[in-house]
Image (tube, rainbow, N blue to C red; front, side, top):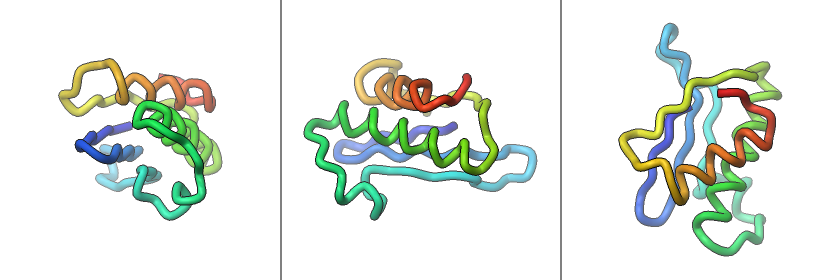
Length: 91
């Protein structure tokens, strides 16, 4: 599970390194995220983590390796991982 954090958005991908393919994606720019009424960047990041976990479980993925992309593990990055763990992903 790879995270990219910009100033305005957060992007999460679950990638299969052996096949070099992206399996599941989610971001705050995703069309399914438009109807979500969540205020604040940290709360939005937590919701992205919950949704990526749900999409991963639907694809049969339960265990991932967390790649924070060089970002410090706090704030929005920590919120994504907390949301993913709450959603059922194991890492």
